[in-house]
Image (tube, one colour):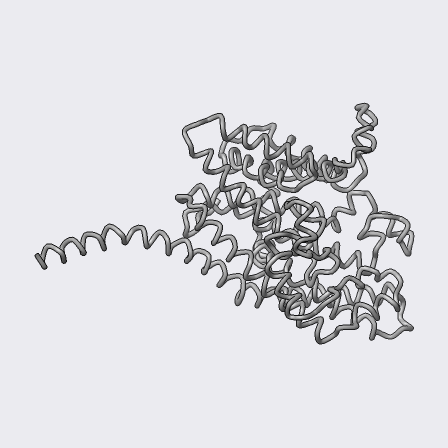
Length: 426
């Protein structure tokens, strides 16, 4: 565990895990675009028999972007808990910092997507018409005006989320004219809405943990975790990451930690990549849960699976060392930039490239070529985005916090100088 300049613990293997999770999300989107049977995990859309090996089997975890997002939220719960615990909390200042940290890269990503779409406005439609499996590439905003761009930056991208993917009441969707995720300039931005409000919840939990009352904190964690699971909200994953800081980084190791971690890791992978919930509900006599509209059983299974994966990794130092390798940590460094920028390239530029490939080539060959080009280009674009957008944003958000601290620290000095000056005048 390394220390950052801001006295917040930084766990090296989490950077590697974050990079791998970002690649999972990218792989899922490319699979949905070109191999929809694997991307959507349904045999109805497979083109070849070999693709069935990736449907609801552990191999499907390689393209399981949903579980990757769940792991992102758990890791955010860990990182933000450490960050908030290491400094005095002012809700107004922390909210401003989170708005800067998430909002500025989001705004640049929306502008990037709008710019690419303006250059190639018909690429998704043409690709979707020429190749049947490419229905995913038909997703694009209905309006590419400045007003639509500003609306998505101000609302859907962070504060309200997309229609059907929001923590806010349903009446806000009509009142604010929120777009569906498929009509977004950059659809993966739906996670930033949960990231923002999850960080505010963590502020409350860290404040309660610092308080002298030992009952409020566990009660708040229980209510927030169980309540969000009941309504199918991923906010419970932030609570899980918050609680994970209790045992992460402890030096006590026992012989049973290794086998327990391996068992948890394997079970978690199985839960994330199979339809085990049907068998589990049948064995426990809880099949009626699957018919409750307010409970997303599949999401609940993935939540449990990701919790087991993360918990297993905390107990296996040998796997952690692999996640601390330079290439994995480099991926973790650009993971946020890769997450924000890969989607516009895929559903616009890569769609145009796919259409212009020779029609005589086999479909699988064309998909492999554009997939390799697209992922490589996304990685290449993420590097300057991280350097010129993400990194300055982090510095700016920290400066926003230091500004308040500097003002508070300077107040007694200014007051003392004013008193001395007043005494001299008298």
